[in-house]
Length: 188
Image 1 (cartoon, rainbow, N blue to C red):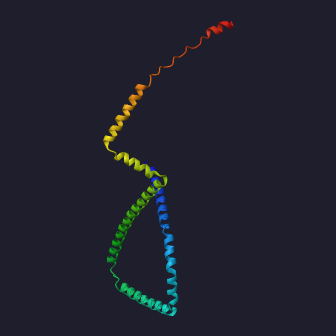
Image 2: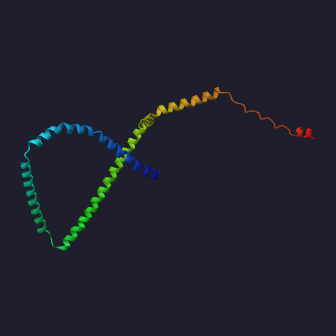
Image 3: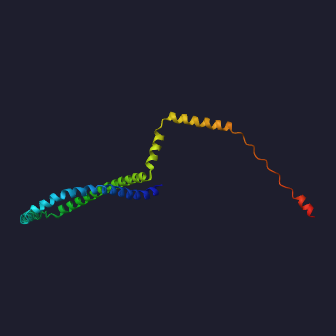
């Protein structure tokens, strides 16, 4: 049974992914309407801006970013520790941290995978109409024991009443096989 579950889970994952994609796609028309409503104001704002002022602002921001990168690079290069033993320990520590982070992400990915697969299973059940059947099954389970006992007594009394009313059938009598000796005597 585990093999079947292992085969179903990827299919449920695909169904869950498709269902979530449909849910997100339903939001697209609203976003398009919002962008269409905001577009005239944005176009007007672009028309009012001076291209030279924008170009000067971008150039000054680029110079500031370049100066910041150069100073950070100089700090990093100047702060490098030349002690090889310390660098080796740091590399080993970073590698262990990386393994830990990778394991953590693997666990989170598996949880998310199972979550989407469960969503897909529910979506498939909803598409098939099985959700209503489960509600009936739950109602039967939740039903009090006294009601079940009364139903059992009622079915037993109905069965005994039916057996008393129906006449007993007699087994059909079998006919004896025809004698072949009489036929063979006449031929001689």
